[in-house]
Image 1 (cartoon, rainbow, N blue to C red):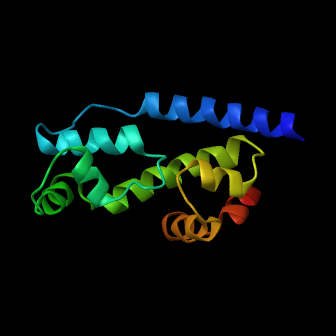
Image 2 (image 1 turned 135 degrees about the vertical axis):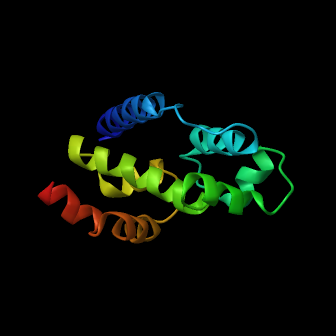
Length: 134
């Protein structure tokens, strides 16, 4: 059983590494927004990642960075994090048989219910349904 869990974790590590390596740096704006995008990219799977943590990681103290991020990127920092995590989850659900609770945990969700709500918001169905029908 432990060997199976180790194999699953290695599989997830491999897929997460490929995903983050494949994120495009093209069309990224300069300055603080680039720093914010970089912090999100580097910490995407940290369960503590949120807009305030991103600002602290970038040493940004002003509050209008969230508004500028939304204006340039088209979505808020929180939404951007959630969308990226759900995209990775979709890929893992399609390409692996890893348990949904393990995927949720590895993607930075402390609770599977939070992951399922976020997934439903972005994908229009729960993770289990997505896996069955995609």
